[in-house]
Image 1 (cartoon, rainbow, N blue to C red):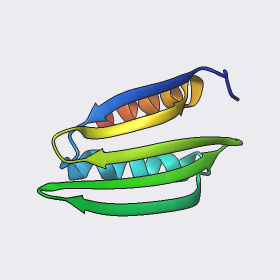
Image 2: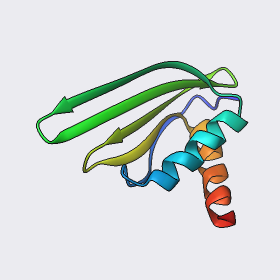
Image 3: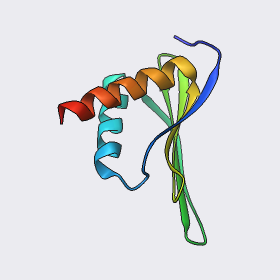
Length: 92
């Protein structure tokens, strides 16, 4: 399910709890397997990262103060996750 091309996509605001919940549900629906996570603090900025494996491809999810919530990984996977998140958010 990989296209080979890498993509970084800003999904939304890092403080949007509803967006985080929707993203978590989408990752679970897709059978995402957690690989690692980290949390760091630098001055007033917090960065959280999660790596998950979906269909053999690694997706990096980053939430960084002032930067937002981002998806980084194979372009096809990033687009698939984004589309599912968008559909779920439209349903409420």
